[in-house]
Every structure is written in structure tokens, then in C-alpha cells.
Amino acid sequence: MFRCKDVSRKVSQSMDAALPFHQRMAVWMHLMMCRYCYRFRSQLMTLRKLSRMTVHDPADVLSNETLSPQARERIKGKLRVTPSL
Image 1 (cartoon, rainbow, N blue to C red):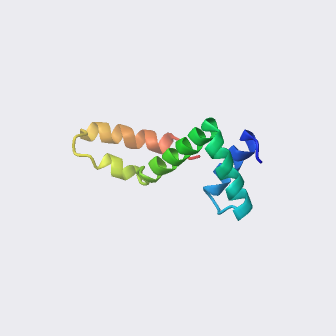
Image 2 (image 1 turned 90 degrees about the vertical axis):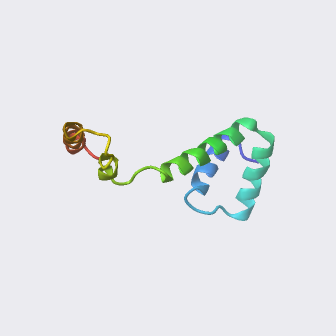
Image 3 (image 1 turned 60 degrees about the vertical axis):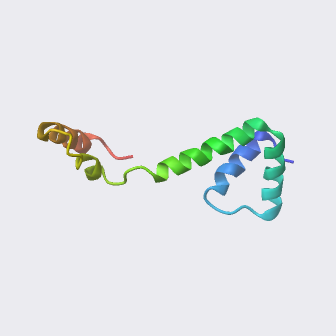
């Protein structure tokens, strides 16, 4: 049986690749008993879902017609100055 630290790592890894069957079962059993790890997994799934909904192109944000031309130019200037991660 995994500890909470191990489960949080395995849950995170499972977002990128499938875990072996025995690890999936051990994680599942732990999640059924530990509400904190279950909550962590739920939060991670929510973050994953929300990150997939974000805008991938900053120009899409600037296409909003409610912004004044001056505001668009200020935003474009700030986007060019901000270093990418």
C-alpha cells in the first residue's frame, strides 16, 4: 500500500502515462480510504480540465470587440515584454 506522498506522485504521473495495473489498483484502494488524496486527485483533474479550456493564442484574447484600440495596443506591448516560461 502506498503512502499519501507516493499516491500524490502516482496520481500526477497517471496524467501523463498509464500506470501498471498493480499500481493503479494500489492507488485506487488508497483513494477509497483517504479523502485528502481523493480531494487532491479531484483538484488535479479540475486543473487539467481548466487548462485545456484556456486560450492558446494571446491574439484570440485581443480579438474581443469591447476593448478600445488603445487598450489592445497596451496589452500587445505587455505581451511582447513578458518573457515566456
